[in-house]
Image (cartoon, rainbow, N blue to C red; front, side, top):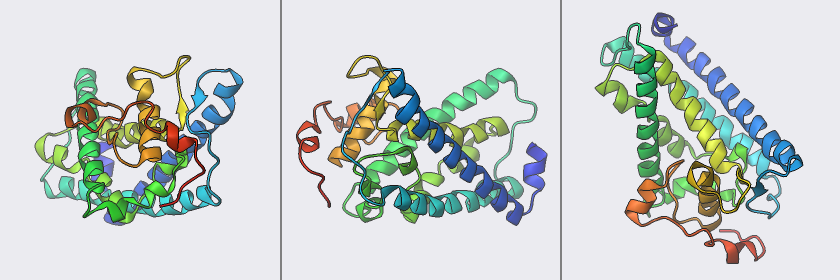
Length: 252
């Protein structure tokens, strides 16, 4: 698998990337939708966080914008592939299971930091015009995950490049990065609290934190972890959106 990827030509890499990210988006989005709209409510487990209806045409817009992001992510695989072909990066040969587990953990932490920093930049005066498209979804859905402006897609898609220049990761660990990313992104955009008690705590509070980010626009810039928001003072209280949810839908 490892040698096969490096031996591909650029067109094959982009084609494989488009197929990979398309399946990743559609399968995880559909699974999360079914889980939070059908299975968990039928089991009386958890709760919808933002009860407001979706805007007219929201899902169609999200799918359309996501198609552009998928193209960018898929075509963008030529950059990590190029690092390998040029010899600027390498892949671990016969890594042990423990090494793979450790690398997955390191990439998870890097993804959290990279997302927080990129997201915080996208809320600055200079870059927020590129993030506005994503915030058209005041009520998040699993299909909001890739509904990004092309500039934001490029920023978020750059996450594996720096680690690859610093360390020879296993192929499995690198492939796990986009999988982990979209699974966690679906959790954050599910608009559903995966807990018997409200408000949830720990990792299960991630969906509530990101729901508050979409409802309030500012604050809660992190992904699964809230540590960077707490350190930077951008964490929102759980009741931050109560007044806004009680009013009719607002448009920016």
